[in-house]
Amino acid sequence: MPVHSCLLVDDERTAVDFPRGDLDLTFCSACGFVFNRLFDPAHNAYSSDYEETQGFSPLFQDFIADLAGQWVDRHDLVGKTVVEIGCGKGEFLTEMVRAGVAHGIGVDPGVHPDRVADDVAGRTTWVRGFFPRDFPDLDADAVVCRHTLEHIAPVADWMRTVRGAIGDRTDTAVLFELPDVKRVLDEGAFWDVYYEHCSYFSTGSLARLFRRTGFEVVGQWMAYDNQYLIIEARPSTAPAPGTPEAVEADLDAVGHAADQFAAAHATMMNRWRERLREVADGGGRSVIWGSGSKGVAFLAALGGDAHLVEAAVDINPFKHGRYMAGSGHRILAPKELTDLRPDLVIAMNPAYVGEIGHDLATLDVATTLEAL
Image (cartoon, rainbow, N blue to C red; front, side, top):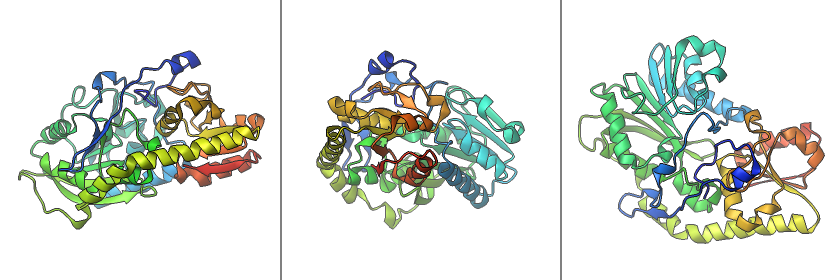
């Protein structure tokens, strides 16, 4: 697999020669943790060239605005200070400030303060770096971490570092969001398995991690078309605090899904290979919509059949004219489809089918739109 999915690549040759790493998913039958046992953190190259944001999607903007408002209200964060570890381009922290947070501190090696909205600039601080190396103390009323924990190994050690950085401030809200591995395994969703994602969690394994590393779980729930797992917690001074909820009893179900994943993976791969060949044999063209991690993983899994995909489309203007890591596919702006006229557009995330269909109709591009 390409070791990074969201690093911007300026030319096709560099994209094709992009560094690769080995992935061997492993399931722990004791706690339900799923991880890449061959992951090498030496490959990490997170920087300002990392372009992970989904913030150009109106659907995603609505989701993060709603979640930010929920967290601010539920955890009484109006007028308070929030630190976000792995803040990306700062969209979520921006929404928390708009919802009433007095001061937001975002920590991420890929943050671009110049892209932060003017209306929150005076109430935000941006640290272009890593926790804990560049920002060691979490002195805040809430610690937020979204879609970062799955990039961390060894993950328990890192969570203990988070707990230590909070110290004796046991009223701090600890709010995390990450992908749900049970859905990935159940669906054979090979496009959601990337080298960067070295740690995968279900409801049960995530709660067990939090309790073992010094946190009391306040609540867990699914969001964003049941793709994301959200956990709310508080620091605790008791070992393994709290009583497991019924929803956490998923060890057998995740184990069964893990057993079936290879077969489900093969079935899904064969289905999409056949679909792409069908279009090509009929003289048509296929493109994928979404050049992020799902797109990179999809093309990597296709291997020698990746040429059946003409290009990748993305609404993020910072990606236009760049190339996909691993496969070398060029990233197009949606308006370029008016010339390409693809016969098949594959949405890399079914959550965005409505948005993509609207964009295609606006462009007057008549095509077949299907989702992974």
